[in-house]
Image (cartoon, rainbow, N blue to C red; front, side):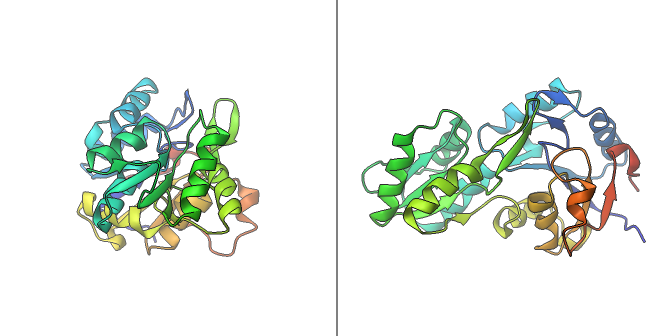
Length: 255
C-alpha cells in the first residue's frame, strides 16, 4: 500500500533532465509537489556546479527551482571534511567542488595536505591525478565526492567521477571514503535539511546503484523512474527491488 510521504528527495541527472535535454514529465511532477505543499530537496552527485547553476539548468528545462532546494555532493563533501578537524586539502574537481571546500574554510595545499578529494573534472590531466596519487601515498586521507561511473547526457552515458576515482584507487591500492549517494553521509544531511525522518521520505531517481541504493541502504522508500540509467532489464539482475517502479513521473500521484 502506498504511503503518504512527508518529504521527497529527488535526483537531477536522468530524473529531471538528461544533460541539456528536458524530461517532459519533470515540471509537472514538481508543480504537483508544490501544489500539495510537500517539501522536497534536489539531491545530486554531480559535483561540478553550485546550487545556483543547477537551478538555472532546471529552469531551462521548465522546472521551477531555488538554490536552497539543491544539495550537491560537493556541499556534502565540504560539510563532512570541515567536521573532521583537518585544515588542508588537494582537490581534483571543478568550480562547484573548489568553491564549496573554500567556503568551509579548507585551505588548498598541493604539498602535504590532510585530505585528497576527487570530484568530476572534465578538464582533468594525468598530472592532476598523478599528484593525487603521490599525496595519498605520502599519507593524505583519500575522499571522493561520489562513485557514479557514468552520467546521462544528450550524447549518451558519459564517464563520471567513479571513472576518475578508479584511476587513483588502482594506483594507490586504497579505497576512498565516498560522500555522495548512496552513502549515509549525504542522506543524513538531506534528511536534516528536509526536517524529516527516513521513514517519512521517498527517494526518487533513475539510477539503481546510486538513487535506489541510497534508499535501500538507509531505510528510505524508493521510487525508480525509467527515464535514465537503470532499465527494467537491469532490475531483473538485482535481488533488492525499489519500493515502486514507474515509466515516467506522470505515473506518480502526489498524496
